Image 1 (cartoon, rainbow, N blue to C red):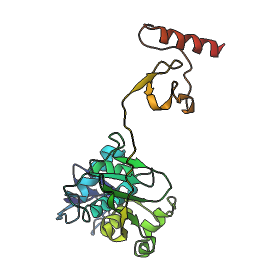
Image 2: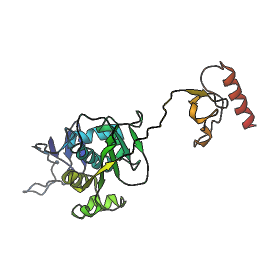
Image 3: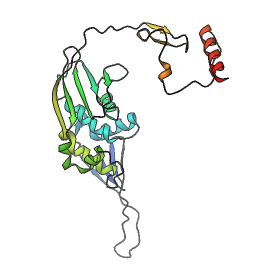
Image 4: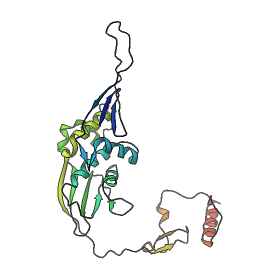
Length: 257
């Protein structure tokens, strides 16, 4: 990892960490301001998150999550810790107890995603997850031990939702997260009850109201009326090609009059 001092902000790009230093150096003889100086120092990365250096993981988070969110960074250490307690060759499901940040760390570092169904999110606002064997249900739960945060005041302030704390700045918070690693976490053994009567089916119905396929188990009509939007006009692309689409457009026009 290359650390470049040239400002007050932490910028990570291409697995390189740049710390900008806004101090303007003055000439010792005449006191005139000089151009900002840059100092580059080679630093060996020691922190690993599932085989990635911390700087590499920050790059991954920025690309996937949109920015280097502290919650995803902390989540990376939590996932890495979890894998120290489970057999590497197993097949696992995960239940995550928050929808904020932590699921993205899980999806980045494990095969479990919302899309493949191996990651379930039960949002009870606890920053924790349980990873368990798909067949037997044996697993572990990783959570944050808030009593361990006294040594990490910025992490504690951020965890308690004080994101507007003027003492919290990104680079310093990121450094505390890197230094704390998984030391702020707890690990407990768990046993997940695996349902035995679950019937999986790919059968679908075509909803007579919206014209789209939906799971057969939901009934004859879909539950699209629970979604937070309404279609406010006719289809914008293509031409009407089916009786269902004609019915949909007729109902839309009727609803708008």
